[in-house]
Structure formats: structure tokens, C-alpha cells
Amino acid sequence: MTHKSKRAVVRKMNEKDLDDVVAIDTKVLGKSRWDYWLMKMSLAEQRLPIASLVAEADGKVVGFILGDASGYEYSVPENIGWI
Image (cartoon, rainbow, N blue to C red; front, side):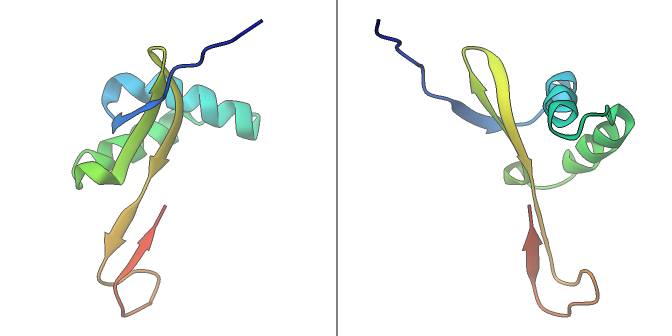
């Protein structure tokens, strides 16, 4: 039997992705953090589009990433980034 999988599409995360992001996070951690992800996604909307992305396959969110870059964070004076 041959299974043909479709490629994932990476796009900017939006508020409609909240439930899918929470579902993935819950699957990994074993507990729901809906309020946490609502706050993170609200903050991400204020940043560059590249900072919050989802991977979507067959119309379903299958992964996500949040990141940021700043000139001063965690008492480190140099430019840093995190994901």
C-alpha cells in the first residue's frame, strides 16, 4: 500500500490557531495551558511575523514555534534570540 503524504505549509500563527496550539502542548506536557498560550499569542501578534509560526498539513496545525530577538534579555547585554 502506498501512502502519499502532503507537505506541511509554514505560515504566520493567528488567533484561530489557539486551540490547536493548546492541543499540541497538552499532548506533550499532559496538562492544558490555554490561558498561557492565549497570553503568548497575544504578545506574539505585536512582534515580527517570523516570531510566531505554525506548520499546517491537510488543513490541520501539526506544529508551532514562537521566537523573539532583543537587544537585552536575561541580563545578557548582547543581542540574543530564543525559540
